[in-house]
Length: 317
Image (cartoon, rainbow, N blue to C red; front, side):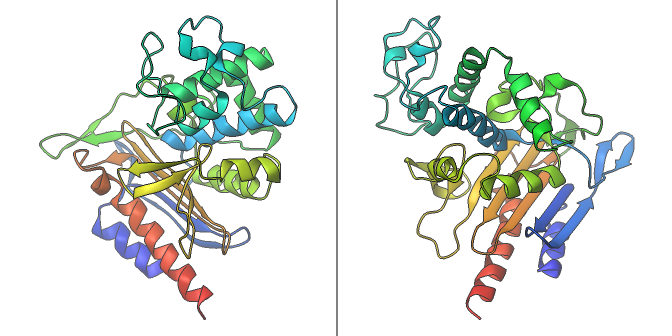
C-alpha cells in the first residue's frame, strides 16, 4: 500500500499531509510540499489545516452530548430554543432535521424549499442553527463548548478559529483560470459549526479513534450518527447515505464512514473503515481544478480506494 500511495502523491502533485493508520499501527504517514508558497516553507506533519465539512461531526457530537444529558430531545423544534425566528416552519423543523439536512431551510427569512423530512439538501445554515441551539441550552458560546470538548479529550491541535491558539495553520491556495496557485483569503469565522474548525492529522486520528470506540458519545448515540436517514447525491461519490454529520456507504462489502471537507484553499478527507479499524486522513492546502470537484479530491479518493483494496485483500485471505 505504501508504494501505491507514494505513486498517487507523485502523479498528482499533492501538497499536504496523508495519514493511514489503525488504532495501534501507522501504515503510511507523509508530509509533502509547502505550507506557504511565498516564501517556500516546507510543510510539517504536525501542521494545521481548516477541515471543512469534517467540522459537522464535531457539531453533531456536541448536540448528542447534550441529548445524553437530557438537555434536549432530537424531536424538539427550532422554536423551542430560537424564538427570534418567526417563520411558521420554526415550529415544525426539528433538531433531527437540522442534523440530517432534511429541513428545507434556505434562508431564515423565507419559506421552506420543501416540506421538512421529505428531501435532502446539503446545508451549512442548518449546522449554524444547531450551534445557536447549543448556545441557548448551555449558556456558553459555541466556541467555549467546542474548546471544552477538545481539552477534555486532549486534542491539542484542534481549535475553533476564535480561540486564536493555533500557530501552525498552513496557508490555503486555489488554482485560478490560468492554472496558477494563488493565496485564498479565508474568513475563518464564517460557518464554523459546518466547516470552519482547524485541526491536524494526528488529532483527527485521535478524534476518529475516540468517536468510533464510543468515547466521545455513547454507543447508542454513535448508532444514531451512523444510521441512514437520507440519501445524498454526492459530487464525489455519486451517492451516499447520510446520518448525523457523517456520510457512509450502505451495503458495501467494505463500508466507509466519515466526511470530505472543502474550504477555500483547503481540501480534506477523514474516513474510517470499521472492518479493520483503519483510518484515512488526507489534508491538502492546494485546491486545484475547482470546476470539477472529483478532480479537486482526486488524491483523497485515490488513497481511500487503495486502502479499501488492501482491506478487501486481507479480508478475503
